[in-house]
Image 1 (cartoon, protein in one colour):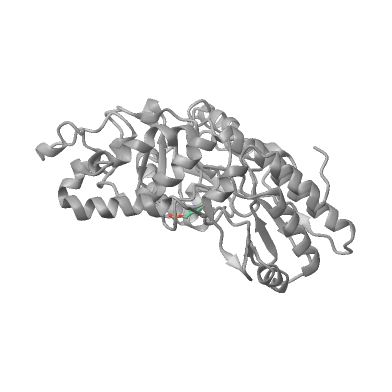
Image 2: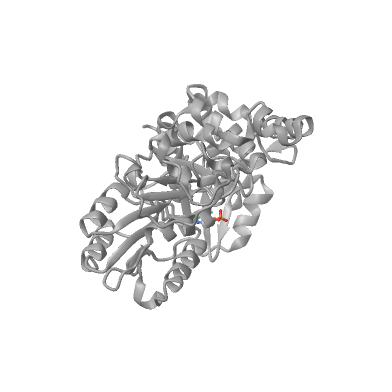
Length: 422
Ligand SMILES: *Cc1c(COP(=O)(O)O)cnc(C)c1O
């Protein structure tokens, strides 16, 4: 694509954007009487304008029906979570039975590891990425300790090479090969939160299986950002949150994927609760856990309907837009951000460095930029001028132009503000 760093070009692209109508479905934080350039959908997605009605409907039904809302609410609470299986399965490339929405991300990470990390004397190692999101590091370490193992022995972290920002695919493959006799589980992020690198989930899954390990992914920064094919890639398990790219509100419910081949395995260990029990006999309230034949078997509690209502509002929008259209726009929009930064760099002595891979297959919509020789005052200037992005010490700015609601004009404005701030 031939880009130009002009307002006219940006406006032309926006006019031709098949997703242009989606922007007006979201509330943008305002600053100085103007919409901000909101580039932090990777951290907390914007609020759809429909969310309030979805939540309000549940509050109304609660007021009207009390406990009877479980049956008589417009969307009965008893089966509230079931309406997510089909649209969320589409977002992550799964079959509906393989997906359930429940709890929150780190909780689900633990529940999945309870089932799929079953260390033995000889197979006990977990392979993960170095500098993973801290919650994932804590979850993995504590799971290892829960099995009376030592993280120093059981956790293998794959790091970027000295002087490099991203982890090389061949280094992941080599580590899998090296530990193939002792590897129990591979558990890495689909997209690294810090540098925006996308891992080759299909190849990692295949290599993991060849080594005799199970393979899972934390898709916090991948769900709603990448075209995922969890089922076809043969991934064993995965989980994600809904408040980043999926716009379902702070602390929103998390999603879980469990490959069909693990469903109905009578030997599988899980932490069980009544909402995972076969729904036909759940309310007989009898002793003896009979699991649901789907990923719902991992549910423990009844659905948190208020936060799920916000999730429903967001998922309906996603379902209408479709992942194919979103990833097609990401390629152009994030490519435009890359181009604009490269243009600005031409006039700079000390250049900004994009540490996210240049290869479009290895990134989603986020670009992480190292502002060499510049401190947080650069970020503060951006914020004052109406850019909401994300600063990570010592000097990384993470920017995610989100295809659902960001525009080419946002990217152009960002460039102008960045130039001014430099
Ligand atoms: C955002 C994020 C989390 C946050 O976990 P919560 O349980 O939702 O608070 C965890 N892991 C990764 C990789 C994340 O990006």
